[in-house]
Figure 1: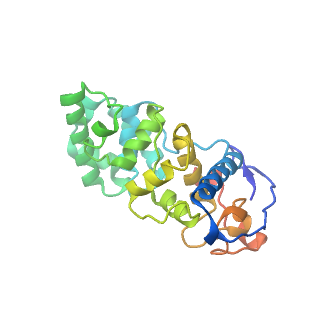
Figure 2: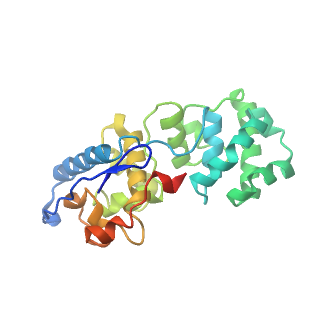
Length: 255
């Protein structure tokens, strides 16, 4: 696979073809392989980051609520005007429902999201002096924020390590044999045992980047993936480099 730069340009990097017998892998071997794959992802995605635009914890909380069943690209088109109109929790708490619904309509499920944003503002004002709390137990009690969203906020707004188990993350770690678990919380704990805690947030970004760009749900670009030699699922997608390379997305596809 090509190593991607911040502007989506690429430099060629060969794919290793060596295969192995995964049935004999020990728990220690799996941990070592997971960390080796994480290091490789760091080489491939040195600029991996949260793809939602934000400047404050509240902005990130709002953006993550809007991102449910919606692309980050679409959310980033909506939030500049939204953040200007609603600069703090009190503004969301006192929002006119019809006006807020219209501003976020294009993100989908806008009625439910509007309720979450208004209720979020009210609860932040009533319980946290209008500030987003930097604690997992408090975040998951807020309207529209589950454990996945809470970890996004902690890791990116507060620099508190967290694993973001979204659909991309779960799909990839199961394909890679890091875990066979399906429940997101159990997946979070299983992967947390494999990766150093200090790396949880950046590894999450890199896994999600790889899932969006290379390891797609229906047709992974196996022949263009530098993790091929470490992946038990190599071959689920096309292995011919020329065919696989056409499946790879770059930064330009997400702008």
